[in-house]
Image (cartoon, rainbow, N blue to C red; front, side, top):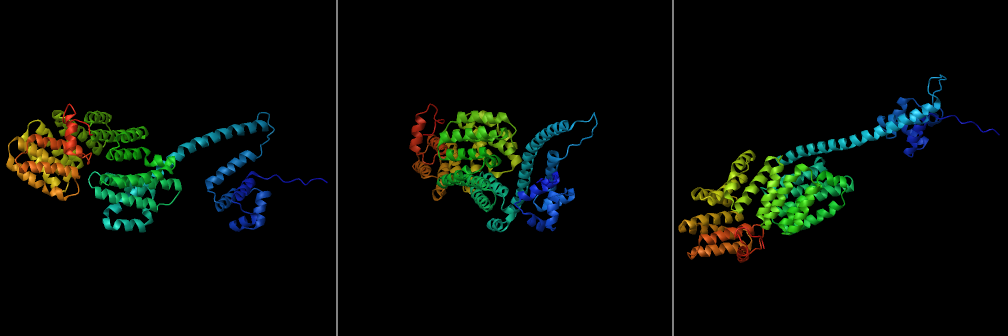
Length: 505
């Protein structure tokens, strides 16, 4: 018995059948979806090629875009389309035509891969920028909203439930930390809430939750809640470990290491802080390196290694390309460390540049700290009258803003000048004005005990400029080590060749 010869199926018919089977659809189900008879579906799959417009329309019902249908039809035509036989002695033979098609196919596939390799990252970058731009608009809306209503607005409006909003709130928390620890903490908590409300792929969500928690830990660190900061950081690390490499790169793996450096520094785990800082530098783009170097310099300052801090800050200074805020951090920290090393002339030379930067940023605290640093330089250079006025202006600001640690330190710096000039009456008034510090929570018990020593010496007429200088050195170091005792500082001072430059014990 002779077998029935089956008709050759056209390329577009094959493609139609493959699209349907890909969706796991029977011909009956497809006909229902297309709104046609089953016979029409069978006809175009087995007997005649469907018109291209019809193929595009049915492809849409099967979840394919017109571009995907065009690409598939093109590939099927090249793979299964007939090879023309012209009979001309100068035209390619069918075998040569197939060879040409094979070469063209390889070139096309290479071009396709190359274009996709370019367009996928470009599209990702565009989507990231668009999401962050929209997050910026939403942040400005939140910023105009009274603080007590921000959480409610965030909860009820799905517009805020995006990774970019969570990231923006976390970063705004970091920006606020230099001025307002309470505001930084509130924004970090909002960032964590936004991250929790996000939906999407688990690896991406783990990354954004971890990032928000890192910034919450940072806000707690700035607020001197070191134990809770450590706990939040550990929770953040657990989430971060589950994040995909792409998410870590998007959110900044270097930034996480830099935050870890700050936390370990304040925990006085200096080797770990320096290790995290180096890892941050290794991961960071070149434009972020100056910021990372500033953090490294602060670690050295906490360690009492002011010379090393100066060297690192000079490296950051040489890199350049910084915005006003970062330039301020580099120049101010460099001048402050030079003053701590009693290199007052070089520190004073940096003041004009700092004045320009402070005027640009218009931050009151920057202006006050610059005035305080100027007074230190003036005192070191023997300009006592001007230095005393500068110290007093800083004292008034720190008292008004309830900044006890800074108030105590600048008060003792003024006391050095007054005691050296024999102005004991003014020193008695100053000692009495320190009394409010003992009702505050911003000073560690050891620092309060040292201040009590000073007040007792003043009351007994035993206070000297040397005692005040030793207390200034102690209070400076106690900023970085709240558990340091005045007696321990004195022992450390005596063990060093230069009394003002010893390492923290």
